[in-house]
Length: 211
Image 1: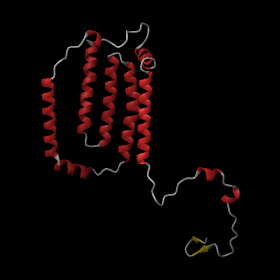
Image 2: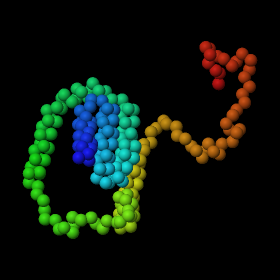
Image 3: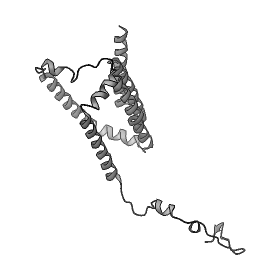
Image 4: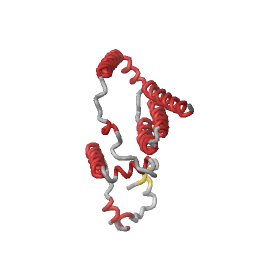
């Protein structure tokens, strides 16, 4: 009974947080509601015995992705009045598109049926390991049977990161860039200059220094 109450509490908070992410007028509030949804989803994973997925959800999504979203939204100069004006103009189109997507989901769910699944395919890919926690069993499976697939996924993510950096790296004219090699090889004589200023010739006009 207690587990059922905790489950319904986490599930209700996840649904409520997801709805508030969409309905919140302020993007910062939407990100905060999203973080709350992630925390409650992690609680559901703990109830299912998947503590590794709960930890990943908190560390990766809450600690990195959601916080990054929050910083980006706070740094953007968003004109909320223009957003509301655009929302009112495109509201009929959005409602029509939402109704179309809802009709497609109803058709798909109505025509969907369970296929004949062999009992062997429905079981876990490997037998349960005695004396191992969920995280230990998952790590043992990833780094033994699926190690090449795991490394390939890492290479794909690395390639995507490099591609994003290359696409966003632009050469802007008129900007001064740091030359680290030139700075390291600079001599003290190139950094400072002793200039002898004649008496009365140091200031010109209203506080301007003569160069």
